[in-house]
Length: 404
Image (cartoon, rainbow, N blue to C red; front, side, top):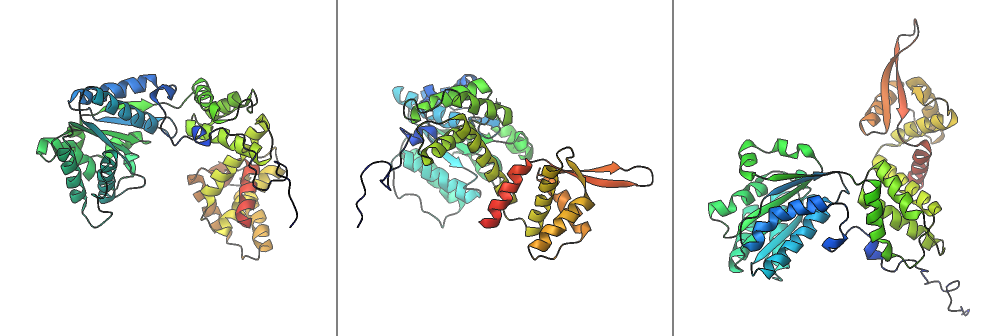
């Protein structure tokens, strides 16, 4: 067997890592309260809502709204954890449970996860069956656990609550103390990306909640830069080029104000540099990371669409690239190019009417824009279509989808 020197160039298992601690650059972990950036007012407001529970009183139910990546879950989990520590200092038994409703959508699933989360926080094992019980039975386990452990106050975080199938768990939590089912004071932190979430609650539940509302606005460039600076210790010293963090922050603020996406971009830029065995993360790596993220997002958007939709989008993207002074095209022109791509792939082209309808469908996904336009005299009206995505990103995503 050929001998290999044990250095980075020849060691096939060498990672050449530029990360000091990968976990610190990811958004998933819950940091200390001091590491939360740009949410001082929100932290204070939620702290006031949970304050009574830290001295044995009833916590206020709170509904938090905001777009993805604005720190809603992070603040809720961190402040709740701090409330538990404050309660311990006051010799008060405070507990909480976290339920990601996007993973546990039915009443039974969410109620079971609540019971399991509470048991886990109390280091109780084996008392919550994996399945086979009704939602009310799982809630009864929660009430019993609270009573058996002499819990004074209990807070349930229902993340992405708008994805729940119904409001039964929220209704039960809002009335558990009053009805005598639970001995502890109970509060709920409802987290939603949709401001209209409250509109679908029935009037009786709406009035019984008596919740306070918090709005989390998107982060601005300065806040994003602070957040990214706080994650810089995830990298080895001096591997981040000076302009990398300001660039990621500025791009993220302009595009979405989403801290999660900004952090993921920084992480991906580092991973690209690491894969290339380079010692510095540069602006070029940031550009590549942003492009890859855009390709991945578009690929996810078209995942599951038919080959004909992909031919249509490819046709519109090619037309957009080949005629840079024109970005709006009539259905018939798109159809001509689409037919060529379908023929090349050995597929029978659909009718022009069907292609027109598929183009209209893409407008609902935010991929295209379709508008009726009046033609010149004698032409009547016709439909024009515009690609709302970067055509190069579309073509790369379609090319990747074809080879996957």
